[in-house]
Image 1 (tube, rainbow, N blue to C red):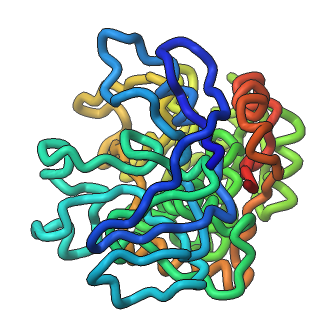
Image 2 (image 1 turned 180 degrees about the vertical axis):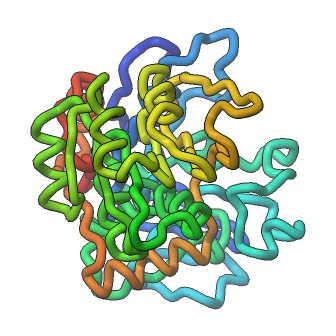
Length: 344
Protein backbone atom coordinates (compact mmCIF):
# COMPACT_ATOMS: atom_id res chain seq x y z
CA UNK A 1 0.00 0.00 0.00
CA UNK A 2 1.02 3.65 -0.36
CA UNK A 3 1.78 5.58 2.81
CA UNK A 4 3.12 9.01 3.77
CA UNK A 5 6.13 8.52 6.01
CA UNK A 6 8.54 10.68 7.92
CA UNK A 7 11.68 8.64 7.36
CA UNK A 8 14.64 10.80 8.32
CA UNK A 9 14.90 13.60 10.89
CA UNK A 10 15.00 16.92 9.08
CA UNK A 11 13.98 15.50 5.71
CA UNK A 12 10.54 16.07 4.14
CA UNK A 13 7.97 13.27 4.31
CA UNK A 14 7.76 10.85 1.39
CA UNK A 15 5.08 8.70 -0.19
CA UNK A 16 6.35 5.11 -0.19
CA UNK A 17 5.16 1.52 -0.57
CA UNK A 18 4.73 -0.50 2.63
CA UNK A 19 3.03 -3.76 3.51
CA UNK A 20 -0.67 -3.83 4.35
CA UNK A 21 -0.95 -4.62 8.10
CA UNK A 22 -2.93 -7.60 9.34
CA UNK A 23 -5.16 -7.31 12.42
CA UNK A 24 -4.21 -9.36 15.45
CA UNK A 25 -6.47 -10.22 18.39
CA UNK A 26 -8.73 -7.29 19.26
CA UNK A 27 -7.52 -5.15 16.35
CA UNK A 28 -9.37 -3.63 13.40
CA UNK A 29 -8.09 -2.95 9.88
CA UNK A 30 -9.56 0.06 8.11
CA UNK A 31 -9.41 1.02 4.47
CA UNK A 32 -8.73 4.73 4.91
CA UNK A 33 -11.44 6.92 3.40
CA UNK A 34 -10.06 10.23 4.70
CA UNK A 35 -7.14 11.49 6.79
CA UNK A 36 -6.73 15.01 8.16
CA UNK A 37 -3.40 16.84 8.07
CA UNK A 38 -2.44 18.76 11.20
CA UNK A 39 0.07 21.46 12.19
CA UNK A 40 1.20 19.09 14.94
CA UNK A 41 2.92 17.05 12.25
CA UNK A 42 5.04 20.07 11.34
CA UNK A 43 5.98 20.40 15.01
CA UNK A 44 6.97 16.72 15.15
CA UNK A 45 9.09 17.07 12.02
CA UNK A 46 10.90 20.07 13.52
CA UNK A 47 12.22 18.15 16.52
CA UNK A 48 16.01 17.52 16.56
CA UNK A 49 17.44 14.04 16.20
CA UNK A 50 18.87 13.90 19.74
CA UNK A 51 15.43 14.31 21.31
CA UNK A 52 13.19 12.71 18.70
CA UNK A 53 10.92 10.33 20.66
CA UNK A 54 9.53 8.03 17.95
CA UNK A 55 10.96 5.22 15.89
CA UNK A 56 11.43 6.00 12.20
CA UNK A 57 10.09 5.54 9.62
CA UNK A 58 6.76 6.81 10.93
CA UNK A 59 3.53 6.80 8.92
CA UNK A 60 1.92 10.16 9.65
CA UNK A 61 -1.73 11.04 10.18
CA UNK A 62 -3.52 11.22 13.55
CA UNK A 63 -6.93 12.14 12.10
CA UNK A 64 -8.37 9.04 10.46
CA UNK A 65 -11.62 7.72 9.04
CA UNK A 66 -12.15 4.45 7.24
CA UNK A 67 -14.22 1.45 6.32
CA UNK A 68 -13.77 -1.70 8.40
CA UNK A 69 -12.33 -4.38 6.11
CA UNK A 70 -10.92 -6.98 8.53
CA UNK A 71 -11.33 -7.90 12.20
CA UNK A 72 -9.03 -9.61 14.63
CA UNK A 73 -10.35 -12.27 16.97
CA UNK A 74 -12.50 -11.02 19.81
CA UNK A 75 -13.86 -7.94 18.03
CA UNK A 76 -17.65 -7.93 18.37
CA UNK A 77 -18.89 -4.32 18.45
CA UNK A 78 -18.10 -3.36 14.83
CA UNK A 79 -18.59 -5.20 11.56
CA UNK A 80 -16.93 -5.27 8.18
CA UNK A 81 -18.30 -2.45 6.04
CA UNK A 82 -18.87 -0.04 8.96
CA UNK A 83 -17.76 3.55 8.37
CA UNK A 84 -15.90 4.83 11.44
CA UNK A 85 -13.69 7.56 12.87
CA UNK A 86 -10.51 6.74 14.76
CA UNK A 87 -10.26 8.08 18.33
CA UNK A 88 -6.61 9.06 18.52
CA UNK A 89 -5.37 9.48 22.13
CA UNK A 90 -5.05 5.82 23.06
CA UNK A 91 -4.68 4.90 26.73
CA UNK A 92 -4.30 1.74 28.77
CA UNK A 93 -8.08 1.29 28.89
CA UNK A 94 -8.24 -0.03 32.45
CA UNK A 95 -7.18 2.77 34.82
CA UNK A 96 -9.62 5.11 36.56
CA UNK A 97 -9.11 7.87 33.99
CA UNK A 98 -9.59 5.56 31.00
CA UNK A 99 -12.68 4.04 32.60
CA UNK A 100 -14.34 7.46 32.26
CA UNK A 101 -13.39 7.64 28.58
CA UNK A 102 -10.68 10.28 29.12
CA UNK A 103 -7.89 8.25 27.57
CA UNK A 104 -6.31 11.54 26.48
CA UNK A 105 -5.18 11.90 30.11
CA UNK A 106 -4.17 8.29 30.75
CA UNK A 107 -1.24 8.39 33.21
CA UNK A 108 0.11 5.02 32.09
CA UNK A 109 0.17 5.28 28.28
CA UNK A 110 3.73 6.60 28.03
CA UNK A 111 5.26 4.05 30.40
CA UNK A 112 3.44 1.25 28.57
CA UNK A 113 4.63 2.46 25.17
CA UNK A 114 1.07 3.19 23.98
CA UNK A 115 1.29 5.83 21.26
CA UNK A 116 -1.40 7.49 19.12
CA UNK A 117 -1.64 6.68 15.41
CA UNK A 118 0.55 9.08 13.48
CA UNK A 119 2.28 10.18 16.69
CA UNK A 120 4.38 7.10 17.36
CA UNK A 121 2.17 4.35 15.94
CA UNK A 122 1.51 3.98 12.18
CA UNK A 123 -1.02 6.62 11.20
CA UNK A 124 -3.84 7.16 8.73
CA UNK A 125 -1.97 8.88 5.88
CA UNK A 126 -2.00 5.58 4.05
CA UNK A 127 -4.37 3.34 2.17
CA UNK A 128 -4.95 1.22 5.29
CA UNK A 129 -4.54 1.79 9.02
CA UNK A 130 -4.59 -0.64 11.94
CA UNK A 131 -6.57 0.33 15.06
CA UNK A 132 -5.57 -1.31 18.33
CA UNK A 133 -9.04 -1.72 19.89
CA UNK A 134 -12.71 -1.49 19.01
CA UNK A 135 -13.17 1.13 21.73
CA UNK A 136 -11.06 3.45 19.57
CA UNK A 137 -13.50 3.64 16.65
CA UNK A 138 -16.71 5.67 16.51
CA UNK A 139 -19.28 4.74 13.83
CA UNK A 140 -20.45 7.62 11.62
CA UNK A 141 -23.00 5.85 9.43
CA UNK A 142 -23.75 7.84 6.28
CA UNK A 143 -21.84 11.00 7.26
CA UNK A 144 -19.23 12.05 4.71
CA UNK A 145 -15.88 10.83 6.10
CA UNK A 146 -13.98 13.64 4.32
CA UNK A 147 -15.81 16.42 6.13
CA UNK A 148 -16.20 14.40 9.33
CA UNK A 149 -12.62 13.17 9.86
CA UNK A 150 -11.31 16.52 11.20
CA UNK A 151 -13.66 16.12 14.15
CA UNK A 152 -11.20 13.58 15.58
CA UNK A 153 -8.73 16.36 16.44
CA UNK A 154 -9.59 19.74 14.88
CA UNK A 155 -13.07 19.28 16.37
CA UNK A 156 -12.39 17.22 19.47
CA UNK A 157 -9.61 19.43 20.83
CA UNK A 158 -11.61 22.69 20.86
CA UNK A 159 -14.77 20.89 21.96
CA UNK A 160 -12.96 19.53 25.02
CA UNK A 161 -11.47 22.94 25.81
CA UNK A 162 -14.83 24.70 25.45
CA UNK A 163 -16.63 22.21 27.68
CA UNK A 164 -14.07 22.81 30.43
CA UNK A 165 -14.72 26.56 30.27
CA UNK A 166 -18.48 26.38 29.71
CA UNK A 167 -19.56 27.95 33.06
CA UNK A 168 -17.90 31.19 31.88
CA UNK A 169 -19.69 31.22 28.51
CA UNK A 170 -22.88 32.82 29.80
CA UNK A 171 -25.16 35.25 27.96
CA UNK A 172 -23.54 38.66 28.03
CA UNK A 173 -20.00 37.30 28.30
CA UNK A 174 -17.30 37.85 25.69
CA UNK A 175 -15.19 34.97 24.41
CA UNK A 176 -12.06 35.42 22.30
CA UNK A 177 -10.80 32.88 19.77
CA UNK A 178 -7.20 33.54 18.68
CA UNK A 179 -6.30 31.91 15.38
CA UNK A 180 -9.00 30.97 12.85
CA UNK A 181 -7.21 27.95 11.44
CA UNK A 182 -7.97 24.26 11.46
CA UNK A 183 -9.06 24.24 15.11
CA UNK A 184 -10.12 27.84 15.60
CA UNK A 185 -12.69 27.87 12.80
CA UNK A 186 -14.35 24.83 14.39
CA UNK A 187 -14.23 26.45 17.84
CA UNK A 188 -16.26 29.42 16.57
CA UNK A 189 -19.05 27.12 15.42
CA UNK A 190 -18.98 25.12 18.64
CA UNK A 191 -19.17 28.25 20.78
CA UNK A 192 -22.24 29.40 18.85
CA UNK A 193 -23.86 25.95 19.14
CA UNK A 194 -23.03 25.42 22.83
CA UNK A 195 -23.41 28.87 24.41
CA UNK A 196 -24.85 32.37 24.24
CA UNK A 197 -21.49 34.12 24.61
CA UNK A 198 -20.38 36.86 22.21
CA UNK A 199 -17.61 35.43 20.03
CA UNK A 200 -14.69 37.63 18.97
CA UNK A 201 -12.23 36.06 16.50
CA UNK A 202 -8.67 37.35 16.15
CA UNK A 203 -6.39 36.53 13.22
CA UNK A 204 -3.67 38.32 11.25
CA UNK A 205 -5.12 37.06 7.95
CA UNK A 206 -8.03 38.93 6.36
CA UNK A 207 -9.28 35.77 4.65
CA UNK A 208 -9.44 33.98 8.00
CA UNK A 209 -11.34 36.87 9.57
CA UNK A 210 -13.85 36.73 6.74
CA UNK A 211 -14.24 32.98 7.31
CA UNK A 212 -14.80 33.60 11.03
CA UNK A 213 -17.71 35.93 10.30
CA UNK A 214 -19.20 33.45 7.84
CA UNK A 215 -19.07 30.76 10.54
CA UNK A 216 -20.88 32.83 13.15
CA UNK A 217 -18.33 34.99 14.95
CA UNK A 218 -19.97 38.22 16.10
CA UNK A 219 -16.75 40.16 15.49
CA UNK A 220 -13.48 39.44 13.67
CA UNK A 221 -10.48 41.66 14.35
CA UNK A 222 -6.80 41.75 13.43
CA UNK A 223 -4.65 40.05 16.04
CA UNK A 224 -2.55 43.12 16.84
CA UNK A 225 -2.02 45.76 19.49
CA UNK A 226 -5.41 47.30 18.75
CA UNK A 227 -7.26 44.11 19.76
CA UNK A 228 -6.93 44.79 23.50
CA UNK A 229 -8.77 48.11 23.48
CA UNK A 230 -11.31 46.79 20.97
CA UNK A 231 -12.20 43.82 23.16
CA UNK A 232 -12.44 46.03 26.25
CA UNK A 233 -14.90 48.21 24.37
CA UNK A 234 -16.92 45.27 23.02
CA UNK A 235 -17.15 43.75 26.51
CA UNK A 236 -18.27 46.98 28.15
CA UNK A 237 -14.92 47.31 29.90
CA UNK A 238 -15.12 43.93 31.62
CA UNK A 239 -12.70 42.08 29.38
CA UNK A 240 -13.11 38.57 28.03
CA UNK A 241 -14.57 35.85 30.23
CA UNK A 242 -12.75 33.20 28.22
CA UNK A 243 -9.90 33.09 25.72
CA UNK A 244 -8.98 30.12 23.56
CA UNK A 245 -5.53 30.56 22.04
CA UNK A 246 -5.14 28.20 19.08
CA UNK A 247 -1.74 29.64 18.16
CA UNK A 248 0.17 29.56 21.43
CA UNK A 249 3.05 31.77 20.27
CA UNK A 250 4.41 34.31 22.74
CA UNK A 251 2.62 37.31 21.18
CA UNK A 252 -0.77 35.56 21.29
CA UNK A 253 -0.19 34.26 24.81
CA UNK A 254 0.62 37.79 25.94
CA UNK A 255 -2.50 39.01 24.15
CA UNK A 256 -4.58 36.41 25.97
CA UNK A 257 -3.47 37.75 29.33
CA UNK A 258 -4.16 41.35 28.31
CA UNK A 259 -7.73 40.88 27.09
CA UNK A 260 -9.23 38.82 29.95
CA UNK A 261 -11.21 40.25 32.82
CA UNK A 262 -11.50 38.92 36.35
CA UNK A 263 -12.61 35.35 37.03
CA UNK A 264 -11.83 34.41 33.44
CA UNK A 265 -10.43 31.30 31.77
CA UNK A 266 -7.41 31.25 29.45
CA UNK A 267 -6.90 28.01 27.57
CA UNK A 268 -3.65 27.58 25.65
CA UNK A 269 -4.32 25.05 22.90
CA UNK A 270 -1.76 25.98 20.25
CA UNK A 271 1.77 24.65 20.50
CA UNK A 272 3.60 27.79 19.41
CA UNK A 273 5.96 27.70 22.40
CA UNK A 274 4.65 30.71 24.32
CA UNK A 275 4.51 30.84 28.12
CA UNK A 276 2.26 32.78 30.49
CA UNK A 277 3.63 33.75 33.93
CA UNK A 278 1.03 33.48 36.67
CA UNK A 279 1.31 35.44 39.90
CA UNK A 280 -0.96 37.12 42.42
CA UNK A 281 -3.17 39.48 40.41
CA UNK A 282 -1.69 38.64 37.02
CA UNK A 283 -3.67 37.53 35.08
CA UNK A 284 -6.60 39.30 36.82
CA UNK A 285 -7.96 37.89 40.07
CA UNK A 286 -9.90 34.66 39.79
CA UNK A 287 -8.47 33.77 36.39
CA UNK A 288 -7.75 30.17 35.50
CA UNK A 289 -4.94 29.39 33.07
CA UNK A 290 -4.73 25.92 31.59
CA UNK A 291 -3.75 23.68 28.76
CA UNK A 292 -5.63 20.77 27.25
CA UNK A 293 -4.79 17.69 25.24
CA UNK A 294 -7.21 16.25 22.69
CA UNK A 295 -10.51 15.08 24.25
CA UNK A 296 -12.52 12.18 25.68
CA UNK A 297 -14.10 9.31 23.73
CA UNK A 298 -17.61 10.36 24.74
CA UNK A 299 -16.89 13.88 23.50
CA UNK A 300 -16.04 12.53 20.05
CA UNK A 301 -19.37 10.72 20.02
CA UNK A 302 -21.11 13.96 20.97
CA UNK A 303 -19.31 15.77 18.14
CA UNK A 304 -20.53 13.20 15.64
CA UNK A 305 -24.07 13.92 16.78
CA UNK A 306 -23.51 17.66 16.40
CA UNK A 307 -22.27 17.03 12.87
CA UNK A 308 -25.36 14.93 12.18
CA UNK A 309 -27.48 17.88 13.34
CA UNK A 310 -25.49 20.12 10.98
CA UNK A 311 -24.40 22.23 13.96
CA UNK A 312 -20.74 22.09 12.95
CA UNK A 313 -19.15 21.97 9.53
CA UNK A 314 -15.42 21.73 8.96
CA UNK A 315 -14.08 23.75 6.04
CA UNK A 316 -11.87 21.26 4.17
CA UNK A 317 -9.48 21.28 1.24
CA UNK A 318 -9.21 17.85 -0.43
CA UNK A 319 -5.98 16.37 -1.72
CA UNK A 320 -4.79 13.01 -3.01
CA UNK A 321 -2.33 10.83 -1.11
CA UNK A 322 0.51 11.60 -3.51
CA UNK A 323 0.02 15.33 -2.79
CA UNK A 324 0.63 14.98 0.96
CA UNK A 325 4.23 16.32 0.93
CA UNK A 326 2.98 19.38 -0.96
CA UNK A 327 0.20 19.84 1.59
CA UNK A 328 2.76 20.14 4.37
CA UNK A 329 4.59 22.81 2.35
CA UNK A 330 1.32 24.71 1.86
CA UNK A 331 0.56 24.42 5.57
CA UNK A 332 3.99 25.69 6.50
CA UNK A 333 3.42 28.71 4.25
CA UNK A 334 0.01 29.41 5.79
CA UNK A 335 -1.84 28.61 2.57
CA UNK A 336 -4.32 26.09 4.01
CA UNK A 337 -7.63 27.58 5.12
CA UNK A 338 -9.61 25.28 7.36
CA UNK A 339 -8.38 21.67 7.31
CA UNK A 340 -6.48 19.79 4.62
CA UNK A 341 -7.86 16.29 4.15
CA UNK A 342 -6.11 13.51 2.25
CA UNK A 343 -8.40 11.19 0.32
CA UNK A 344 -6.47 8.04 -0.69
